[in-house]
Amino acid sequence: MSYTKEQIDQLWKESVRRERSLVAEYKRTHYIPSRATISTPEIDAERAEQKRLYGEYCKWIANRKG
Image 1 (cartoon, rainbow, N blue to C red):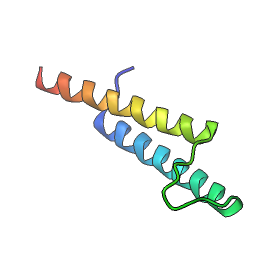
Image 2 (image 1 turned 90 degrees about the vertical axis):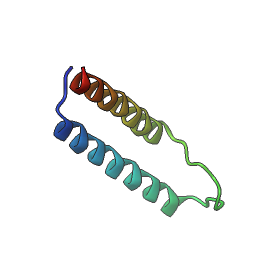
Image 3 (image 1 turned 120 degrees about the vertical axis):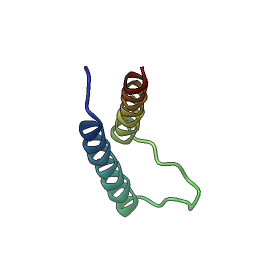
Image 4 (image 1 turned 135 degrees about the vertical axis):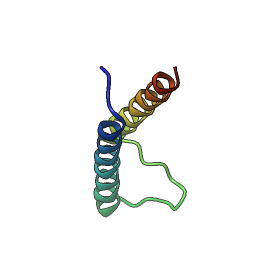
């Protein structure tokens, strides 16, 4: 699917907001050492979505230049 830059930005912001919310919720209910990386299926899914959106952004840049 082809996205506009504005769509990618909006989707990215929503995904980051969801990830931060999930991390905050996890921290409220679990003890986390300061350097720990929190990994749950839901958080990993948001991180995968952000990676996918970064790929879409790279495609948008390439199409814009080409």
